[in-house]
Amino acid sequence: MVAVAHRVVVHGRVQGVAFRHHTKVTARELGVVGWVRNLTDGTVEVWIEGEEGAVLALTEWLKRGPPAATVSTLHVEAVGPAGHVQFKVRFE
Image (cartoon, rainbow, N blue to C red; front, side, top):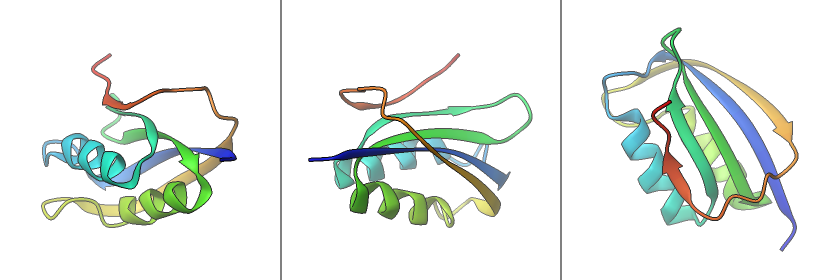
């Protein structure tokens, strides 16, 4: 498997709506690794690594997010894989 990675910053009503939890569940269903965390400016940052199709699928899902979220824009950056072994919620 050739791993690709994306760093995504999600803008909109994305905190306080279980965005991180739903992202973790969806990422694990798709078989990607990385992390998700809230940023102090009200956005959510997501690091995704894995098979290209799965990374793209999660990136597409982030455009909608969970039912209570309202995503306005995404900033997607292609980055090099960091070698994560699971997908987790970061709290720092």
